[in-house]
Image 1 (cartoon, rainbow, N blue to C red):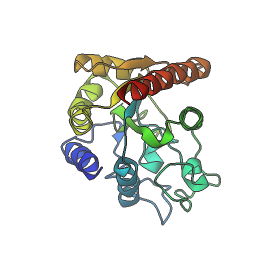
Image 2 (cartoon, rainbow, N blue to C red):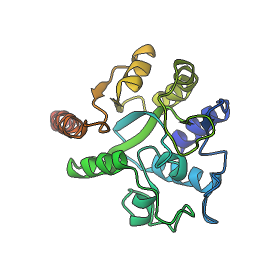
Image 3 (tube, rainbow, N blue to C red):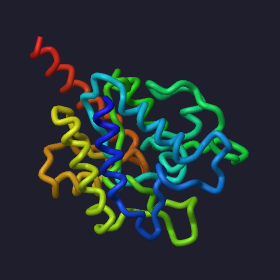
Image 4 (cartoon, rainbow, N blue to C red):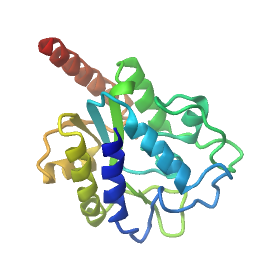
Length: 220
């Protein structure tokens, strides 16, 4: 879906790089490998958006330092890309100079659950605040996005919704649910898998998968 990538890229170009945040698609990490950088992360996002049949969008709260910051795709780590575990993207070389590839616990839970529920090929991943908010001077840290940062991400969410008007939206975490509510977008609220939320997240995605399957059956 080229129009989805183009819509997101246009919206991201209008998004300022706010203090204490990192733009994965325009900035370089100090530990990017020679094969990685903003252009490769844009290529990953393009491939993630180009898959046909996207009918579910999982929207997290913000990019994380172990995932989207290095990969360019929310809930997606360097380790998962090296393994070739992401639909539409061939196994990649190392993306960082770190001794071990970056691996994000929530990313593994999200993708494992999507595969278990046969939703991996139909799901697009995004964040309410698409940049990576971190503590001052600590790029390898995560913090909750501020109200101002979430507001800055709203035009990007609007561009995403316009590009996928029929997709089901699911908020992963309270902040993303609040952002979608402010925009007036109907959505399913899921527990974030972090901080002991794995069981509830998995159950929530399972219920959502059942709903989507039932809807597909009714349309036949």
